[in-house]
Every structure is written in structure tokens, then in C-alpha cells.
Image (cartoon, rainbow, N blue to C red; front, side, top):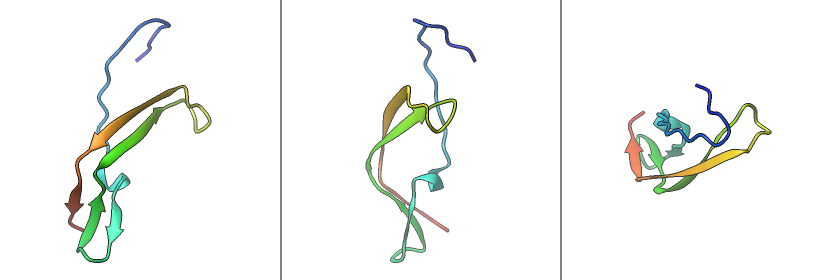
Length: 63
């Protein structure tokens, strides 16, 4: 997809929940903290031109 200067597009990203989960030794699996996460869309790791945020509900995950 190409977005031209001045053009706006809405995108939906689906991420594997384990990417933001932390191991919790009190659980048989992991925990996702309820908070706002920053998301960057970029050409490479040094490009921070498009940064947004998403709020996730807390959750636990089975191993």
C-alpha cells in the first residue's frame, strides 16, 4: 500500500499477544499488562516518523 503526502489511510494491525506478554511465575503462562502501548510503523528501526498508541486490556495467557 502506498500513502501519498497529505493522504490519510486507516490501517488495522493484528499482533501476536505473546509479543507484549511477560512471563509470570505465579501463572502457568504469561500476563499482558493493561496499559497504553506505543506502536511505530517504519521502514527500519531508526525511522520513527509514524508513531501511534494502542490501549490493551489486561489478560493472562496459557503456555
